[in-house]
Image (cartoon, rainbow, N blue to C red; front, top):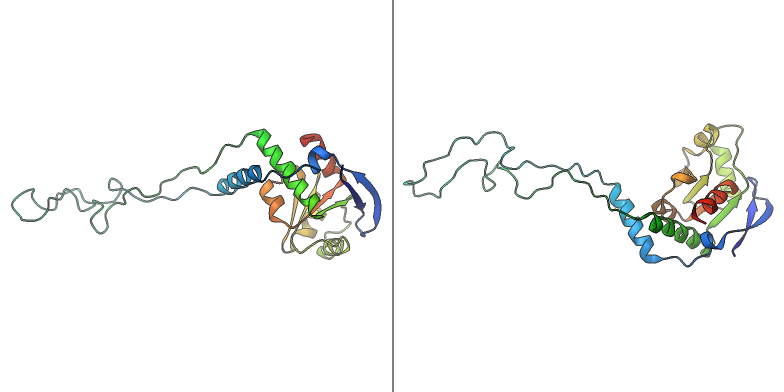
Length: 207
């Protein structure tokens, strides 16, 4: 079972915690991570692209010239695809890019992402995060004392306004409730900071 040190906001060691091996100590499943990340990336696409086919382009109701006798190819409408200003053939239309992913696969991907950060020594545990004032300076000082990288995701069970306002203007840093964090976000950031209540949440849900 992986054992990690728990720090406070001042970067001081408070205690040690033994994490649940089924959640934080498995061998990351690369194929499952790929499938879930791909599905989450596709879900970000709006799919609102649209072109007009020949039935939607304005005009073109009249036959440009008679069927026979002109020496030119027969034409039925100036809004046919071969005409300039005509409709588009097989163009993009609104669609959903979402892929179905089973719940068990999502959970395995979350466990794999967390275990990956543990293996890479990129997981930092904090007993709690509380700020008396909504100041960015306080949040940055906490990150520096925890030796967090310049690309960090902070996960906690509950978020208050002071914490939100303090972290808003910090570049390359994301603050989220632990229940809302995706596998894509976990892998997109180099360092993951978890509060103890966030650890407990993961062990309850994924254990």
